[in-house]
Image (cartoon, rainbow, N blue to C red; front, side):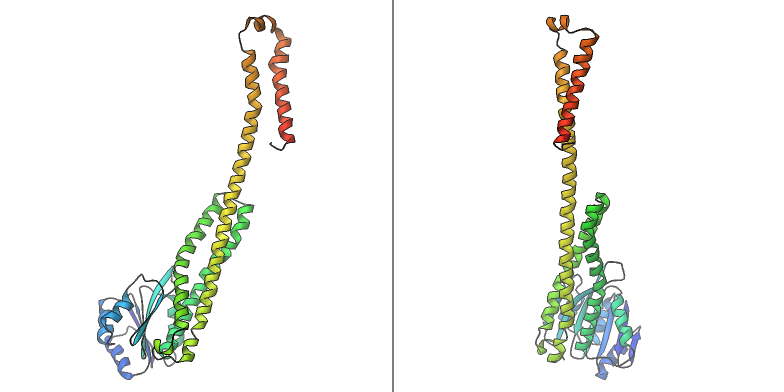
Length: 317
């Protein structure tokens, strides 16, 4: 459990219930950031900030899809950003009222810690502008994840043609595994930010119309990120199709070669079986070294050479 408070006097860590109650009594805007909240934080939000149980339930319910929910007197925005763990996403619940902003997150999030550090030197902005800066920071933290996946997906098709093999196949599967959670989060987050950017001023407490328009910035960046994800998904699918086509072509070549080899040995087997018959006429007349060399060896060699030349001429070998 970690508490951070950004109020008129700057950023504070290790915040007590009394400090939060004092910030609320002062009447100035403040931002309370809770990391890995517990029952004590729940009591703080209920007692010191006067949040109702429905509001707390909205703010603390983990595992939600990105969303923008407006309620009477407060809004809840669920958004995701890049976590400390490489390639992972972290969930953030933002509860904004006209006077303060509360963020609840289960784990540290570098983008918010950096934002709090930048804002800690001056007076705290109003909650709508704090929420805007917070969402901008979360969206910016997603850019490297999407850019990396997009760049790797674009390289896959060329690598499939040049290299092929199991290494490329594993990379295709890895890219597709990374795309699934990103698309599952970014597309709903784009829709939530779009709804927030088109909200009426009364839907966002303390926001003016020009404040609401500013949310178009993170929304448009989310649109571009989702477009990049769609492009990466198409590139990964194209790489998969190319890989499967290459595998099928190689299999067809092998099958054609094996069929040609079987076709060469088929007449040899016939000749061997024919001259291996124990008919009296053949036993009495086909004998001696010349007959063996001509019929037993020469005829089979001639068949092999003739079929090999025919197959090479038609491109089967």
